[in-house]
Amino acid sequence: MYTFGLSSLWHLAAVSVVKCTVIVRPLTHFSIFTDRVLRAIICAIWTMDLIVIGAINVGVIDARFNWIAVIASTSRNDRPFPSAFAAINVVVA
Image 1 (cartoon, rainbow, N blue to C red):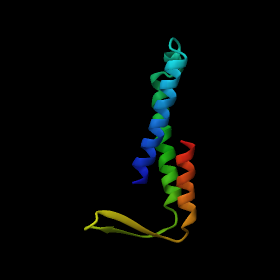
Image 2 (tube, rainbow, N blue to C red):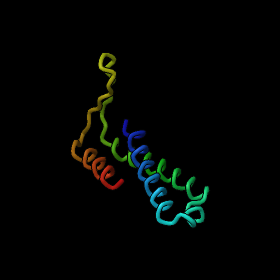
Image 3 (tube, helix red, strand yellow):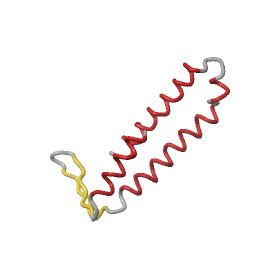
């Protein structure tokens, strides 16, 4: 849930930056965002996302899947850290 949700949020932020550059600099945006730069941005998003998810899941003790509700739930040692870290990451994006 966190991995794909967070990466899609960062992808939307990256698309917004690219589209803003296309609007602000219509003739030079191809020199700013080359294919190599765009691939590096996507790789950085996924790498950062995996690091953040790893940090959020550090305190997980137990994970269970409810087959009736089709929801995964976890038990944690420290409750405020993962929630605050996820909220900060959403606000930054």
